Image (tube, rainbow over all chains, first blue to last red; front, side):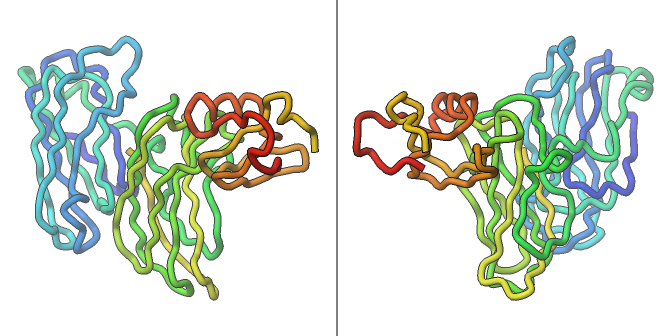
Length: 235
Length: 63
């Protein structure tokens, strides 16, 4: 069993680099400490195949979503084990709607020594999946600008935005929308949006052809000195 | 405004868009007929089913 730690994770999405694993993996165990109470069950860890593996990597198969049910308390540690089948490639460890204080990864394989040398966590966060990092805004806006928008690398046909609105004041509501673009310049708003009137965690899905660039927009309803703090990730 | 509609360039939007037009940044809503989309974006919208070509006269006001 090999373990890698990733403290101070502040985004809700991380990436596990399994590209160089040369042995057959038999399991992946995730352990996280959540920093927010009353996170809905849907916010608990899921492991997904991002499809972002390098060209020479093949063989990622049978990654199943594994959701832990129940509502964790602040600081509570949750663990989930996800069955893998000969896994190589990038996996996204997704904590939608949750704030992760720390994350540990343990990989079970038929050769622990080899795994211990090869498995690692890539970077402080995989920014390709964070649609809008934690921010406090006081006016309508979006993340379409270069440096703020998300480049998913290719057009897609579905996207689910996980949104955590930590606080809202000075407005009756705030509406979030997903925008997508083939070139980062011309944008189309995806069909589904979500309007929140108080701090909460939620998600909204969109399907159909979606351009490779993603952006989030927010629009206050009935604003009088509005302020909102939120985080968004997209899967 | 150019009469690109007659050239087949005008499309009816099926989703809100935000693009760079000749006069600057422009936002158009779903249902609007516009003729000043960047060509590549127009083609992409059509291919993605996010806009439809306007055929004949009287299909709507050009933007």
